[in-house]
Length: 264
Image 1 (tube, one colour):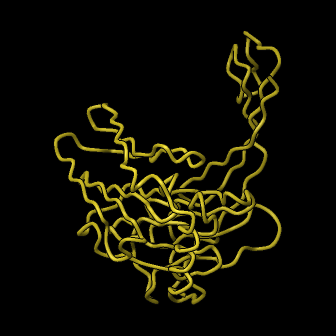
Image 2 (tube, one colour):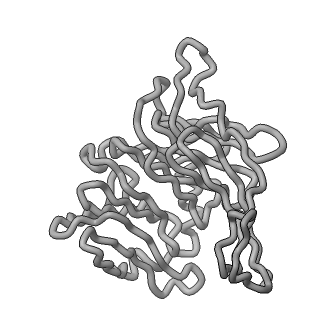
């Protein structure tokens, strides 16, 4: 009882809405004619608290080249809920704050100077190095960013042979491992300590199209990890990783940080 938390929602025009979710002590079976956030008989109430235009929706400081973008997905910085990250249809990740000073950098980009009209399909922050995040794109390219810099630490353009990326997620037990799923139901496993050029494993899952992926594991015990795959038929499969992709060495985080430093 007494549950209360905040959630955020985003529309394509870049309007970010904040809501407060409250649990009421007693349910009202009749509901409320004025409170549209409470269903009849419900105990959980949704209150709209504030809204803001998450970005000016122009992608360049140059007014001649400036283009309006669509907001496609939203992520909140794990270490500071004031900072939000929005994937766009121009290959950019917009960075802003819900209150206080403006966030820098304003945009995270590809390595090249020119923008590319590509959908950002996935953003995922590392559970170990909280300042690092992966960006997956509609042309199959992958970027690894640090929060403090607008250009990527690393970028891979041809890992999916052009297939759009559906999801990118870090391993929950190994800092240098992440998984990717593309629109052709190909599953990729990357181990940056083994190869920083290409995936170390590619599994082609053609029989029943995979529509979603979720990586799981216990970072505390490191006794198991794997990936859950949702198929078009409605079936959900759990695939467990071997020990090599589950148990990390004591120096793995430092090795990953060293790779990132060399990239800078």
